[in-house]
Image (cartoon, rainbow, N blue to C red):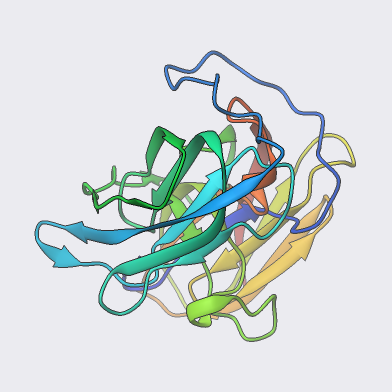
Length: 244
């Protein structure tokens, strides 16, 4: 994830209870979502894009029902996931700016898998003062923040998860306020940028200074999403404004 400046809204909650959410059909197989009861093996590999090794890409196993079965690629693009569940799994690999790959596989011993990421779709434009309604899927692009004030993750990353992204062009100096609201109390969200982040309950607003002429990328994502079933979606409403 590299951009002039970035803002993402993340629906996050590592270690929270599994939420009851809306779902919709997906073309990704869901037969491998239920986590087997035992672990056995190490899953390793390298993540690249156009031959370039990608650092700090998220690699996780979906649907385990347990938090923390994830890692980030090293500076050379390599990763290692010990204690991978034995049997069918759903592996997810992604990073901001790239399309997330979701791969089904069967684990019966140590496995090596290399992954090549493709460029992600451009974020939709959103105007200052506008409100948008959408929902995040577990196979959306992966967003993360390096904000030292929130959940310091591996590789200097804090909140991390799949997100919907939007692009804001800033017309004047001021303070950007991005507010997310969502239904229910079981899903937790975070408003983030590449440098800022805030969690957890609806309504949630992140504020930070911006300058005229800058471009801010923002989105909405799910944190701790490796605990959720693949068909899970997180509906939300996002409003942005520019204060003096």
